[in-house]
Image (cartoon, rainbow, N blue to C red):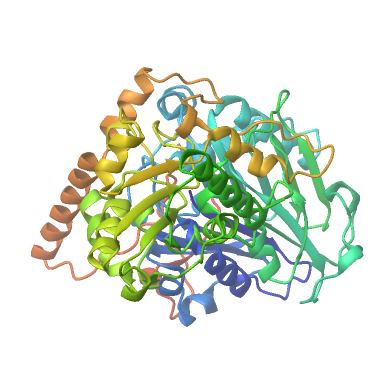
Length: 571
């Protein structure tokens, strides 16, 4: 799970840097490990990326260097590769043209693609990031296109070749230096991506001036374009939401003509978006696949309350308390349906990252009590219903139940707006191993005992799906979802027990992550002993070293480099 955003402004004298920072800040909930952006200024690329939050990565002196009217940005949550700064995005390769990529999701056939790129094509793969594979696959496909056809056709044919080779859930952006901006979504539409525009120079919405489809925008040179993971970024920047990018579709924004082109580049696309976006990842004020995330969570709360009434008609609940922040909407509607008061029993420290996406079990456990504190009067002497969006490892849930009891609750009931998570997610959500999941090989009674609650109630999968489907506009083509972490059914064909899952476990369980972190610490310690007071950020991104700006007074040590194209192919 990451956040991506791309912008093309019609006026070459306008800069996208502040818009990208503002958009990434709005998308910060999708990734807090690293952030970066690249901008294009009349065929010169400027890159800045580093570990940390958006506000910590981009400072005034960086923004002064990040000039240009087109750019892409990324905030990272690592599910593949490592947390190294070298794998922060965007990534860059110099041939052809100079191409950068920002990607959200996960490619599952990385070993096969790496072998193809290294052994068959001869391209160097420098990191473990699947985003680097997407970058090199597109670059290689673009070099093979017929020279007699239009640039637009070349780009769409190259995207079709990438989609034909990649398996997984992904949405991404390519910035092609001197050519334009390309956005694309995997053939199943698993990861979200939305498209918007505005009249040049406008900061307010333009209402019915926005066309219904990118294909109808023609060559209007007075239109600014934006593509983002969630509609909330489009709203915040003052653009109008046009629509979701379709499964298997690519949109090409020509920076030279202002034309917008769209094409479905996969022969057999299906519409199966990740339902966990509605449960947890997306902001409630986002619109995904024509459905309000907020309204879908209201429906989840309603259906959850109805199940509680069926199972425990004499439930004895005194108060409904959400576990901040994502579950608030669901808990509010559940309280209404149960005819019980809704109370804020936990106060959240907003300067602590989302515990689910923190690496390492001990880190998550320690952060729960730093993140939340109780209002004891809302618990003392009461039977409390706690509502969470989901229960993954159970780390947060166990600590929260204990906090409720410490605050004086008589009984603590625990509910989840999502069904039991019993299977890994392989499309960009860090649920990699079954053994780390609290619901693995346990029923609800055993889970309640593990959490320390009096009982636990999960949402039914059918009810979760219906919470979204019932809000779709008439005639919408969405029929199914990716529910793999609940059902064990993977839309890309993997089966539990495949060799892929064994490799995934060995690579991405908490113990393996801790070993990688330990090795990284050892490297940093060794560097310190060699009196290396600062390790310069590497921005080779699988291509070459590119700290090559020779302007007087410029230093690339601040991590904001200018990228210059080469005439030779990177091999």
